[in-house]
Length: 404
View (tube, rainbow, N blue to C red):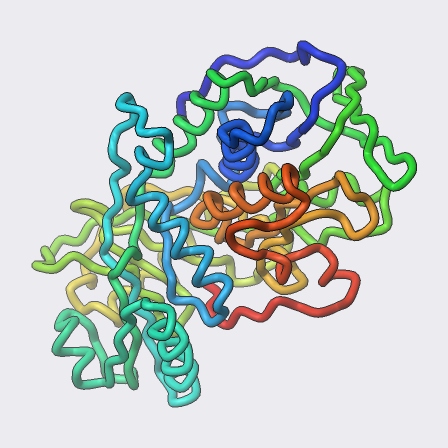
């Protein structure tokens, strides 16, 4: 992604808001702050790698869905999908901004036993109550709707293509960044290495080059490195890097259909990607990895993923791998959902961490919500208190069954 040129040194010794992390979440927060007429302060974004080469943002599959089991996650996605669909109007109707490509191919969840089907039906009932037109298919109607599937061991599935699919996140990120910069947000290539706490507030931050900055508010949006500041305060952020693989492949036999994003009972997911196909999967042993570990396991593709694809769609018996990469989830080991909001003890210390693969699609709603917290000390649009860091202390997980 092409981003604005950054400098190493901050221009000022005080900022009303300093955001550690300049990828999708951090930049989204900055944009919603600076574009709010009630915010008059200075904002600094500190990002160690402005190219975002290895960030979750750059190695995402750019997907968004509303088929969740929790009402709040559905409401978050409803706002975000509307935001993506009407991006220019949300960006002050700036005529320079192009329409965001949003391929609404839908999501198809497959179930191979009655218990999984029961969960899909329960989720569908909730989704329908929130005006998400998810439909349930039994084994036979599933094949009628999606004739390319091998449904032998399937009992059914759920499908929705209303505002679900994949989109061009680079347009959103680049224009959030460009317009924030035009309005005075400062971006520097550096790293926050320490925070200074005093009288229940953060009053200073220290950068890798030795700079010291006084702050009014501090936001931790550091992705997989979210726990970096844990040693200086009581709250432990249970976020770690977990590897996820993406494989691009071609099929020798052409499909007449565009595939929705299909979540197979085996755990893999795949979809059409133009004239090719994209498949995502986790490692066999899903455990924390080093921050610089982006090695692809091609043996996994050959021995496990390919056979699953060929079984689910017989036309995929002859396919060719075109490209592959590994990215990292900022994986929240507590409940795999975002940790959003103020620290339980330090009123000007905010978190936007641990999205576990949902960060890109939730970034518009998170940016809006945290900007409201910082400006008004409350949520004015969508109440995200259920995702507060306080739940970590109270040991009350935010339950979401539809995790990919």
